[in-house]
Image 1: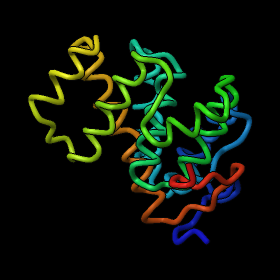
Image 2: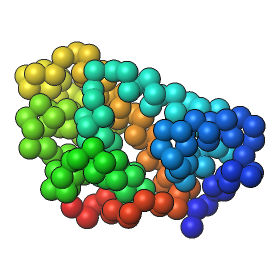
Image 3: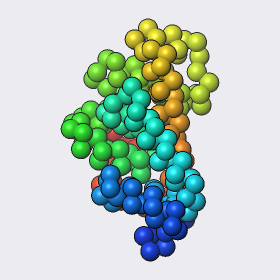
Image 4: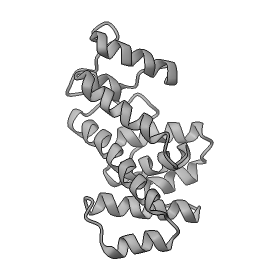
Length: 180
């Protein structure tokens, strides 16, 4: 059970209500994570804004979702594992690849380089080694892709940590982050 209120449509402040309308127009529903963040509409707006801005980066939705799965697995976040599994399935990613991504793996070499670097960022709390950077570059990642990986990791750490603190009720088909 969630340890903070998951703001209902009726309870939403005018600012949160406006954000809920935008979320519903994209997703059809307001996931519980966003209902928790609506306790402070500025926090909800910040999380949504970061996601919207990253969607304009070089990484396509499948890469962003792969990073989200890897971070969820590394941080043992069942809510995010569940949400990003559902999103990945909607992007036609198969179950075996989703399971691999939860463990920081991919059958695609370029994506593997991204996920290896993302895993290093999470595990080392951003204090990656020269060797980690050299490996990322050696695998073909550009400096822009390295930066974009870090920012995607941070975005997902934000949601992982909110879910850990709150114990957000999972409103997707449940996937355990460490089940794979």
